[in-house]
Amino acid sequence: MNVLFDARTAIPRFPGIGRYAAELASALAELFTKTGDTLTLIGNSASVHTLAAAENIVTLACDVPPDSPMSWSAINQIIETVKPSLYHTPHRICHPIESVPTVLTLHDCIPIRCPFETTPQERVAYLASVSSALRACTRAIAVSQTTLDDLRNLFPNDIEKCCVIHHGVNKVFKPTKPEQHAAAAISNHYKRPILLYIGNNLRHKNLVELFRGFARAKQMLHGVRLVLGGYGCTPLPRHTRLIKELDLEDFVTWIGEIMEAELPAVMGSATALVMPSLYEGFCMPVAEAMACGTPVACSDIPGLREICKETVTYFTPEDPESIAQALVTVATDNIVRNRNRTVALDRARSFDWNEVALKTRDVYQDASSR
Image 1 (cartoon, rainbow, N blue to C red):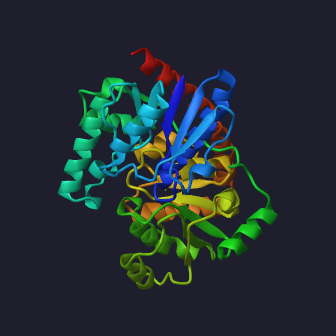
Image 2 (cartoon, one colour):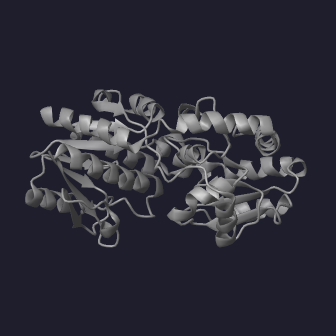
């Protein structure tokens, strides 16, 4: 096979999809070296040099964004030049290509499941684009059973094309040493001990209720601070007002985007990772924290239950008192912390990018046979 893989999302603007694109491209490159297949990677001119490199890997630059109206014209031109045997896009937009089979990856249904973040026009556009993409593609990959179930409810006529392949966790996410934790804290300007949140500041991440829960737990946390980081993780006016109202200004630190190389040590430096989301398709920071041996407190929602099983401390995301109780548990109960760390490390081993690449290649072969 000569697979054309669209990795234009492997940039900070697409943090979750981008991580998936970059990690899968690297894993496919390693696998294809063994299978003799060829991989052609599309990236933009700023990121294409960071994509996988090997003898059987070709990289092409395309600066048309994947969500641009001009994207499909640009991709068709590349297909005419490369003449691949299959095209794979990890972005939810996919148009019919007569010359080659196509594989589509779908990550979540946030615009519909979290309508408070979108306008009616945006929701209509989302439904139209995903419906069109599912009709156009040969096969589709959902990154979780949660996402597949949502797709089944929204697009029941096209779901037979879909299968579930979880994300992997890069092997750099593993337990780190105390000296690395101290260096990460200095580099990212926070004081330990901390409860750590990694993500963006969108409403479905539920930071407002996290602050309310943290305020209730503060006196029982004995000086543990709350640190928030990640691409797009900056305080909005409503966050700033609430933090002041709850008298948390000395206990909440925003550190912004974290260097990829420092993420394992930042996670390892935390007393626990906290994920208060109202909805997730597949939450990579939670899986990565588990692989680092960092205890997790997170929302009791289907997407996180699917990833974590019984390895974390759950709370009700709409209930500040439930959040507070979970924060106190993961910060102070060493029996729970040690138990969660042990079982989470074992669970995290099931998220392997090499296995993801093998399963994805199976999808490619099935799509090609169709």
